[in-house]
Amino acid sequence: MKRICSLLLALAILLSLCACKKLPESSESILYAMDTQMDFRLYGDDDGAAAQSLGDLIAGLELELSATDNRSDLSMLNRLGSSTNADILALLRAAQTLSARTDGALDPTIYPLVKLWGFTADAYRIPREEELESTLKLVGLSRVHLYDDHVELDEDTMLDFGALAKGYAADLCRAELEKRQLTGILSLGGNIQTVGEKPDKTPWTIGVQDPDDPAAYVVTLAVEGTRAVVTSGDYQRYFEYDGTRYCHIFDPATGCPVQGELRSVTVVAESGLLADGLSTALFVMGYDKGEALWRESDDFECIWLFSDGSVRLTQGLEQAASGCAFTVVRR
Ligand code: ADP
Ligand code: MG
Image 1 (cartoon, helix red, strand yellow):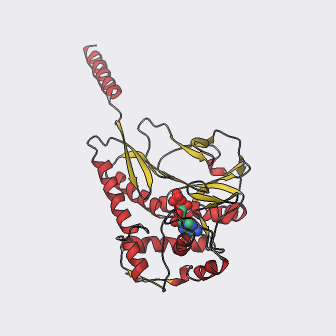
Image 2: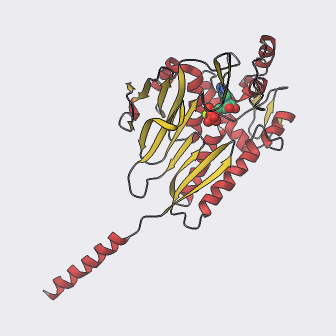
């Protein structure tokens, strides 16, 4: 009898210890980098060391990959025509793969177009036909010669990793948090990256922004585990002229900002880089070609917001999505 009592007591102590085990505390931080606001919510980063290392990592990448900072490795490549920078080489390899998958819709050589239309200096203008034609001659990945340890560009060809850099940064941040065995959710501008499970085991909640109201969400996603959720749209950076909107995403085939039936495309994938590249490319491709790409792929899910307010999403997101009426695209 005595024995049973002490066993029960031990069990009770054990249970109360388990009940007291505290979940890791969350901490929030804000950073301005890569032309946008970034927010981190980390769990268990008690001394702030992980947030600090993510900040350092992103600042380091910005120094390498900014197209507008004259001191960056990318700017040097654009001026001098060659580079051995490992991150630039990695991004170019990813860009080549994504370009092939998207029929050329993703193309980091569009930088001369971004400049021509005035997006680098906030001095927007609509170019003349001849300017457009001559600038388009500088665009195309065939003008980029990628070797094992360096890259060379044809004359006057220039790169811009605006469509990929934040996704690449998110992947590196995720690896850093995993190394530290921490979990969290990162927002790098329009790029959301979740890492691991939330300590209380509830899903991460991620909103897809209303293109007409930055404070409102059209769809909310309940996401489990590690995921990248990236949106590209016509409302992040644009100018208007004569009632027409010219946004910062270019169709490499025409040299013009994308105009069409879509307001935004959100891609959910395992990799931040893949989601970032695909969200830009799918916005360029439009709905029909994008849907066809999804059908032949198994590494991403997708949400399309249309100009008429309708929403379509792929079947892998059906359970995760709420907040509005939507059409499910099935295989
Ligand atoms: P954001 O960075 O605003 O979240 P995106 O990831 O869609 O949005 O990237 C848009 C940026 O990518 C543009 O500002 C421009 O620098 C660059 N870009 C525009 N069109 C293309 C394209 N077709 N392929 C690759 N990069 C592009
Ligand atoms: Mg992108």
